[in-house]
Length: 336
Image (cartoon, rainbow, N blue to C red; front, top):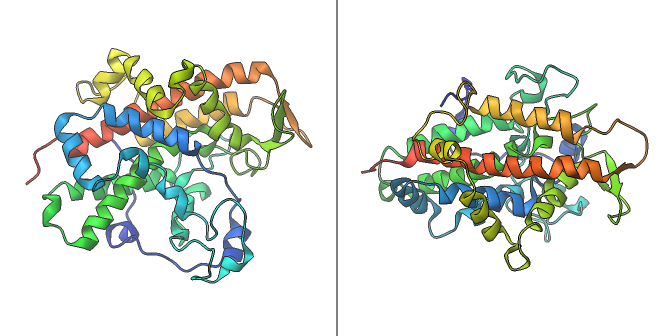
């Protein structure tokens, strides 16, 4: 698999160090973002991948998980992005250690969750563009995935039991980040923005029988995922059963790609992180942003949901298949 490369990675390859950055500074330079896919989408992507792991890979992944499930670690990186706990901003959290603030806050991880490729552009990723510049607060999801793949390959060089505690934690965290970011990469509004809208976070929308007002990003994070789950029989409207249904209905080509039996899903279509980001960007441009920009609140009609719901199902499926592929490539071997 060809992955985007960069010449620097001391942040990742040493200790994933935490930088001390004030909340005021972060808010000034970054748009406030909601969580990608929400918990359901991340867990579904992870569960699909886990079901497609080859036996040796599953054994080695379980060792890195250290008793946690892949579904549990799939949502963990979202807990690190904000200095406050929950969704409500807390101005007291400028200072570390304040009661009620997030003790696990790691500001350098915030930019790893997305890549704001403008829909006004040509749709091609460039690691020299402003949307993926290296800063003390990170760079972007494409290069972050690359770094964590490199780190996990390093973890597989020796038996996990032989590493010191700090290395074990480093590799465990790397697995959680990789699982999470493969989900993020397949949420289309994490690979696009329109006129600096933060991936739809500043686009206010509503729909019939929906909330009076929410943002477009949240629709793709949660509402569209839930609409897919609700297509299941009433007794199976949950993440585990939905993921199992997706796995059962995978094509032979998708299953073969995930399990290392084939180099691609479709002949001639590249499978690498850059290609996946560009594909998600295309979905954002053609579907998520299909409504023209307008002032005030945009009403999403049934035609919008009819187009968007199956796209989300496809993205969840492909996210799981591609995550399985990466994990099988790294861990489907005997590690001594």
